[in-house]
Amino acid sequence: MIQTHMDALETRAPAEREAALLAALPAQIAHARTASRAFAQILAGFDPATITSRAALATLPVTRKSELLERQQAQRATNVFGGFSAIEFGAAMPRVFSSPGPMYEPEGTRRDYWRMARALFAAGFRPGELVQNCFSYHFVPAGSMMESGAHALGCTVFPGGTGQTEQQVQAMAELKPAGYIGTPSFLKIIVEKAAEMKVALPSVTKAMVSAEAFPPSLRDWLAERGIAGYQCYATADLGLIAYETEAREGLVLDEGVIVEIVRPGTGDPVVEGEVGELVVTTLNPDYPLIRFGTGDLSAVLPGQCPSGRTNTRIKGWMGRADQTTKVRGMFVHPAQVAEIARRFPEVIKARLVVSGEMANDSMTLSVETTASPAGLEQRIGDAIRDVTKLRGRVELLAPGSLPNDGKVIEDARSYK
Image 1 (tube, rainbow, N blue to C red):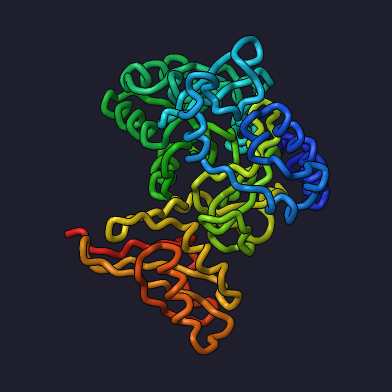
Image 2 (spheres, rainbow, N blue to C red):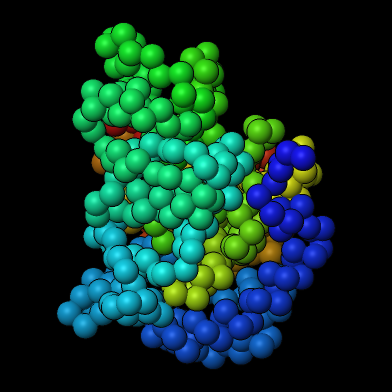
């Protein structure tokens, strides 16, 4: 019998999965407060025992990557992790990595620490195979993330790393790996170099790609050369978040995370299907990030995956949520737009459009409203000035008028 899913977790009834995740949530929050100095401060005043639903989870503050970096920078001399790590240097932390910032991430000792095996299995990798891992093995965790997942799956790994294209081709030709792991653009470079060298690579029939866009055109290009490429979405802070399946319909969420999609600049969950920022709570006890804002935009896809996996699907990466922009020398943040909207119960959605030319720009706050009482436009205009210290025009719109693209601030200025 052919195994089509890595384990039974992937085909659980959605209600069973949700109950299991929410049952684990209070203990993880309590652990984060006890073992992480940062979350002891961030979650002070919250009772972990009461966080047993998504509505309750949404009352907790979102910790965004920028705040993590700020805490790390402020505490460099005493704690390089800014108080977020629950483990320390030594046997419990075999490796520490650095991401741009720099931000430092710990790696624990648990098997498949980053939970990448599930994505690799969905991409067709199986026990007993050799894989060529062309993600970086230095500074950033990408190489280790994929290698640990491949090992957990029962694969042997050739640590190809980045660069040295001709040597990569030679290794593929002689070792005959079953698949490639790395960025899609580097795989294309390797395949093109092999053609230039007149070296056949028939063994490489599958690929797990990540870290950059994987457009359908490149996917089809690889398929024409006998390579089935699949993508996953992971971060250095959280590990695997979602992965692609043979259905090619969005990305299925990993079983070890609780994912919310919130309105950018806030912690408020959006309705299903609306584009917003991905906020992730991980069940990792070593690095227990609670409501961690990734800064990435996505949206939930309706229905279940045709592959038989029952977890929620997302559309994949749809841009960045941090749309902070400078207007007339003043920074305007998505959180400020959210603050203006919150002051008016009639407003259900808002979008600030900055237009004109640099040094001669203007702001228009377009708002969807359920009602337009007399004076609303003026009062919203006053709120714009109060919150941003800038003047802005107000445009009242009917519900559903604004595009569903996750944008809270649109910079439409001319930079010529």
